[in-house]
Length: 428
Image (tube, rainbow, N blue to C red; front, side):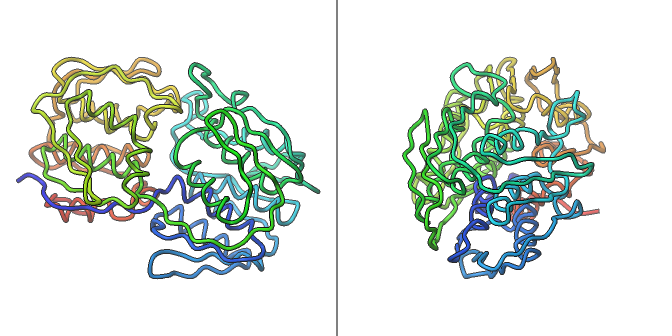
């Protein structure tokens, strides 16, 4: 029985994480974030606000963060190790207290294979050192000091592994967000060249302007005046872009009649322009109207050769395109130049019968749906688990998926949403 119905994604997690860090820097007024997703990243970061003496309250539309009475405390491994976004807490701690002691960050292990999949942290340290912070070695995490952060000029190309068409690679997003937050807390004018361009950064800049930070921005640089007299603000997050891609993939791959309710539709379609252009090239029709996205697809999709970069398709979107391209008329390829180790899901799809071949940072996809029933597969990260769920729904029989705990980091209601569309999914 095909899936049918309407789903509503939660707010954009990638935008929320640095916005919470920005809210923690405000020692004068309250920040309200509407459409905040109820995911693990949100819960962990808000628990840190409360651990440090701030207060968090739920509103009808989201959350309020009152960080006026924060006090210094080390933030232990058992808190920070749950998510990768805990790394951004370094900046508000240095800004408010001049020191930070932070446990190791966690999150999806999609880093380079020669690093055991661990996500990098050194770029955050290096960015903050440009602003005058000092760090010392700690076995589990970071210890840092900053008497006063000082404005600087910083080029994100310094943190890029690929500079064709702009700064790209696994450090670019984190380096940009760290530099923006540090600039707000610094004395003087900071210039950030070649910043990460996607809407999680745009959302952070929008919030900062609302609270009184003076920012001059274009595609090539940001100029930020530090030490603004911060005021309160309310900011509504758009729908989570990767959750939107997830349900588009479900509609395409499973031939499902799914309508996706979107918050701030214009911002979402702007943020997904690269994905939407690629879907159009594949033969997928996307209709956006009345606050919804609906999907129509041809029976056979056009093959593609895709390169993922920090200026094109989100790396998080990549696994869902690989699944959709199983329906293409000829072989396709995906090369991920951001998270080059993001292919564990493909190894699991091989167990289900997908015709995938992995060459270093490239995946070759030959047409044909995964088909093997009664298999046990493991989702090793958030998107891997989600794409395995969609693949399994296209297989007659039972598929057992472990690693479903990862879903809570990026989806508020993933399984419940699929069940509401008619999917037969049970927890065991």
